[in-house]
Length: 233
Image (cartoon, rainbow, N blue to C red; front, side, top):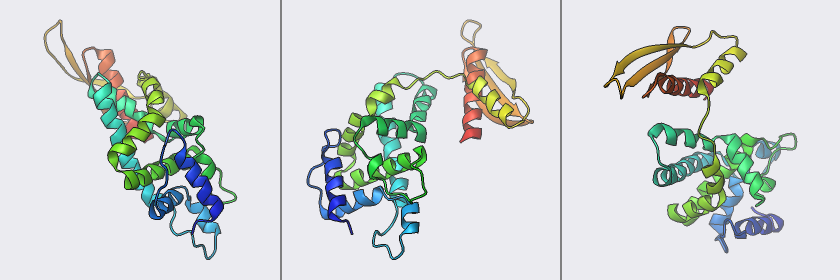
């Protein structure tokens, strides 16, 4: 059950220029409300009539958001699969939370959490993903995509592509007192003026990443990227 004050706040949020959703139906409004309920809030509310938390919606919204971003990148960003994959890292929680707060539309202010629960980047990002699911169920994929583009695209286009993954991987291992990575050339093919290298990176004898490139530096960076992402999640 949504009280009047909450309903007004949700309708105000939805009508903001970046979202532009006016006059949603009762069922849709209920989903937008649910999208902004963290489980810690319900755990404190005995005999709550709020229903469910936002985790099922978050599950759906994560997939919808990733498809919208991937499709945008496919059509608008030149480069290899590796370049697009690097850009997809933008969808990590810390980036989503930062952008959502920076828009000033106020989604984070309407997230309901327990009295001792901080609104962490993970919680803000999860609520936004749930909100994306509510948009999708209300408006469909195309209109949801247009809203996401308005909210996120300018930041996505500016997201840095280049990272020194060899350095990131080394620092990650050092912080955990693990041995340094070892890079091993697996193959070198092609003409001398157009070589194609394949490297793997091992940690404690286990292969954690494989990379290809036209130079050894590029191939080892790509191997380190795959290894770092595999370890850091």
